[in-house]
Length: 446
Image 1 (cartoon, rainbow, N blue to C red):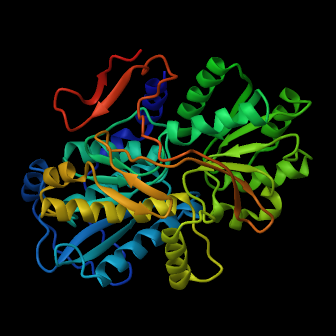
Image 2 (image 1 turned 90 degrees about the horizontal axis):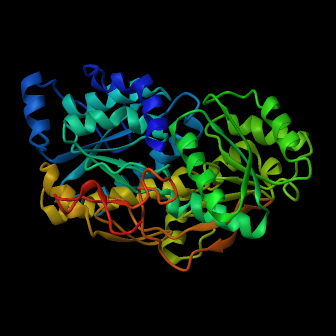
Image 3 (image 1 turned 90 degrees about the vertical axis):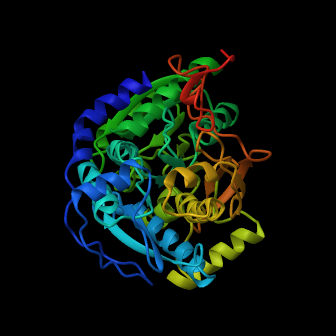
């Protein structure tokens, strides 16, 4: 079922994944240059298909591919800042294998075919050693055929719906068992059994809600309603009317909206009198930056499930927050996708150093598995399924826009990309260290 949902959306933008690369010059980040010649198509294809890049000289080129404009810019611009902070720190400490990291930055513009075009450009024209990129699952699905056809490497920093395990992607955000499923369990125990599901109309919310509905069935909960908005749409009045009709006495709202839709949703939710005491909202794409931009007065008392909050009390997090504020301003905040983006740059660095090459992507890929890092959220580790272990946390928005952590897992939770509530994927796992298993294999567990 989840795969079919993804396939329907994929058909809308998947063809853009093989569009010829645009001969555009990428804009630069700090401490970088982006001047490069345009290689021939033959040399591009040869380098890509052998799993090697043509990086040379005194720098290692990497691509940053996020939405710097459009509806997703509210979230993605801060992820770029976190990646650039990590790169600046690594360069200041001597770089990678004695070379500085050179950034080539591209704007996916909240448009999925554009993401595919820019990924192609970064790989074929700019010859980057890896790409850190994407936010929405729609953008990731759009670029995935590019990375798989060219045997290249994407590091993806955002929580997602699972039901995927690519050899060419490392996922440093949460799988559903590290965010969505624990949130549903907590809500059932603490807030009620009737759920209304609201989300943006693309693959992540649709697949996430498929998982939630199966989990509620298994745990004795009830889905009383489900509705979607096109990504970026702000016409939320009809959804709020449906919520009031389906939950006249109150109940849980599970929110998978993304982008600007959240601004209208929370403002109108409050205007309609649907307050957190009777209508608690659990969000999985609302973090500190979104709270800051929407306004904490509209979100105070509501909930979010993440692996990291700025309020996590660890020495590593204090250092991370201080460094980010020193670079970007004392009024700025950190959040989960930013932290996942920050640490993936360091995990890539460690993999390259273990492999003793940035150019041979097959060696880097193998070296990445097993890498551990003392992250701001706590220790993380890359597993053979190319996902990382993560501590799960649930936070409640405070009046100052920060989160009070009301629940956390006892330790890091191992990632499960193939969902065990959805019948079609129950009993499946992923292991890229074993050629006989690969991206999806049947386990003994049913």
